Image 1 (cartoon, rainbow, N blue to C red):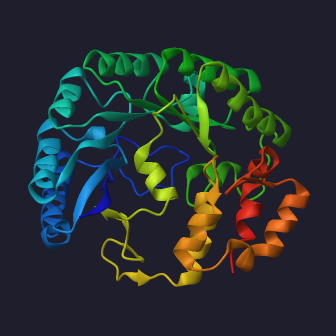
Image 2 (image 1 turned 90 degrees about the vertical axis):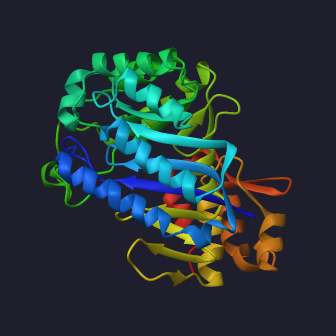
Length: 363
């Protein structure tokens, strides 16, 4: 049986954040229940596919999955366990927003086999949270975090966001240190991306200047300090935006960067199986070998350990230098890539301009 990662999308939230361009929206109780029933029905359509696979990880994302009731989560996982063979040691993650989960809900999660939480903190400063449009305060986050620990969760990720309105280099450092002192096993530290179609784009996008946003120099300093500060607390950077205690890297996300097969179920969920990619409701697209090579490079280089030249040759029957020799030599000279035995990886300078490096590997 082949390995498969499972992603389940819950597109509901209490209120859409000002910066969010994910597929999510507010909803009523009836709409959520109807969606859950439809989701379970879709899960059960995959019985034939499930015969060939075993599930190594499950990620329930959104939106705000923790907005669902215990009964609704039981329905979903009942369908999953009915259809799929889930490994006993599978990593099973649910995204949680403070203010939408309680001790009782966490107890339910534990009974269902959920063993990892990803909690959206973003900032420890209430005025910054308010500006982002978050529904919680830092105090409410602390309550949620404490309840999760009390119910036995020993693998927790915290999402943090830099370069946000009203944030300073000092307030970002305070957020990093306060989060790290809590001792979560994993921290995801992202920079704000201002996307079209969001309230933030109307306010700050399209070249608009704002005194509320940190300037580019401050943003670069925040970025540099992130690794330094989290390193003080024992977190190792293993991917461009992700840090973990030893052995606590997110297995599900590593699967994406290593091009493992995954099945996405739910509104707008993406899948990648048998060299085909599709979004639920759309026809699968067969990736050409060129597409696969491109993704091997720009997804694999997101990992700090880099990519294997031997693995490239075994997969594509050609040497990496044969395909990308000119680009590789250019980046070695510029100090953006480095070799370490069989591995090629971004340097610290390369990480700072990673999008530029990745673009050079597109055909």
